Image 1 (tube, rainbow, N blue to C red):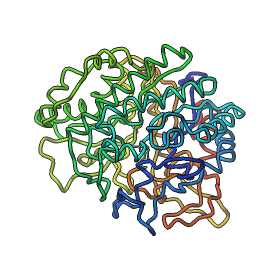
Image 2: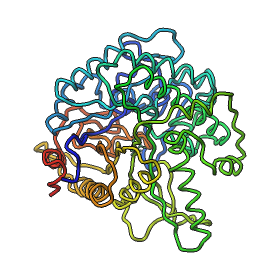
Image 3: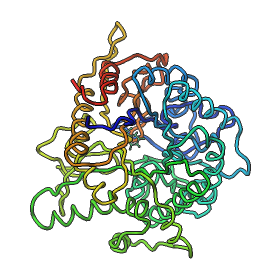
Image 4: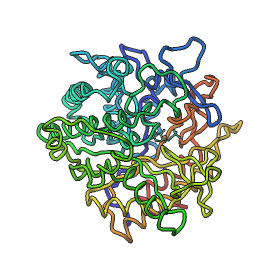
Length: 480
Ligand code: BGP
């Protein structure tokens, strides 16, 4: 068999995109709670105050908060061994700054973890998945301030102690490398104090973003070290998205441009979190962007001591890179886009589909870091049609997943990558992070919830549900 016997098959979600109940039981407002809905053509906005009459999709999302038992039972029916989910920081510390945690928030995740356990499902918990407290944006411009390091440490210490017997696998920050891109300031670093406007084009301050990222590195390293010292049973991971980048031509100018892009987006953060030090090329990245990092004594030592046990990635797309990219050939992508690749097709959202890019990613990263890896996000965002009889036929999604699993298999069987598991994104339909819409669906479980806020929230099994069930049952041997 290609995949190990204890391979962690499952699915992935994030609290703000699935839970809803945004102000229930003492929960505070997070950044996504200030993000409106949108679409590919109508960009989602972030607003300082909540506008009456505007739809904020995280407020109800697909109401996992009140449906978690049924949802986890469906995941168990598919055969899940693992469920990647995140804890919403604002359920535990509503503003991020309280001295004591919100007990009702802690109690909710107790119930979720207990339910997973009853079904023999191992939780894989992202501690911060694009949902920092909005109060910290107002207070200190988010992660630009070192104060967030201490607030985050307090949050982590609380959840480590509280869930120490229920959770073994932890990821510190979702797609921490989002902060290398403009979009990261809304999604990840919260460096948007006072800003109302489209999320994608929030004013860009590389100085703030890179400083915020440094502060996140220090925070991550400190809590990883703390976990290792106090909870030796924990496995601590990082999480970055991997965009496969290929030179647009064999012109050496394009080769160098592509290498620089790979370094900044795919290796800069992994080098810090897996090797414990900034890479040698980091000063060039800072120089090119006019960034002057403020570090305190002890930061570099923290980074050195806080390296992770395993490396996880999201993988969706590949793009081509040229030194002078023609504007009319650009296409989108998960956090970053690039040039169109004539050999690839793209989804309706312009994300180019490239299964072999996943094999490339796994080889590149394993070669560089030599620690166990896991693919914790991958999938196809597509429109689905709910048939009158309640079925959803999604062969396009099955094809996408099949081809990516085939490439993971080659990476393991032929190339020798140490792969722990696979949790495709949005195993249940949820709100899109980039556009704030429901129409871009990833799930194997369909949820009756639509972009105008309507829908009865009922759940249906898609064709991909039964297909993935068979894949898990045969440990990836039967992909037909
Ligand atoms: C990743 C995020 C997820 C998720 C996914 C799909 O970047 O970690 O939160 O949403 O991409 O992206 P989207 O929802 O924009 O289609």
